[in-house]
Length: 194
Image 1 (cartoon, rainbow, N blue to C red):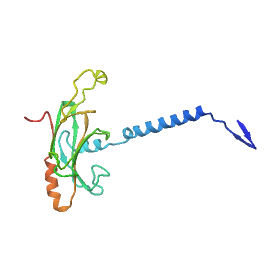
Image 2 (cartoon, one colour):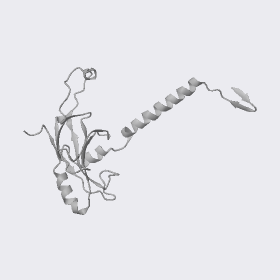
Image 3 (cartoon, one colour):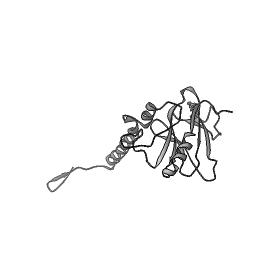
Image 4 (cartoon, one colour):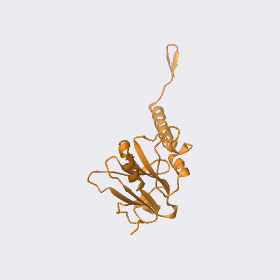
């Protein structure tokens, strides 16, 4: 330590500063990534406890104190399908008729691993087959199953999760049309018919 007047100043080396900076960064990143796994109840827990698995349901408009999903944007109406792929494939069909409509698939902890949005030049009907991941140690090195070139087959990183179809609300005059289009969305166990 160096003495400067009557004060003692510690002498820090560059090595100690770098170790402290790296350690602080590791603790920050680890705690940030761990927070979703430490929560009491996830959106998947809330939805799957009140809705049947592998079936799409249109959620009622949220009202204060009567929200299945907290912080749900009141400018959107949702159709939700909690899924479980332990029994095999899940076929998802939906119509995304106008810009602002979207379909997204989430893991139980809220990680989005697939999304498609409506676009003016794209076909509005969407059909996807969700399948469990066939991950093995050999797949990490490119050995094993052939790559999936079928864009309508989606491998889910986890066997459970949520499919969400989101529709914008355009006012009372369009509520009936929006609800009818959302009601056409389906989740069903097994491959697509035909």
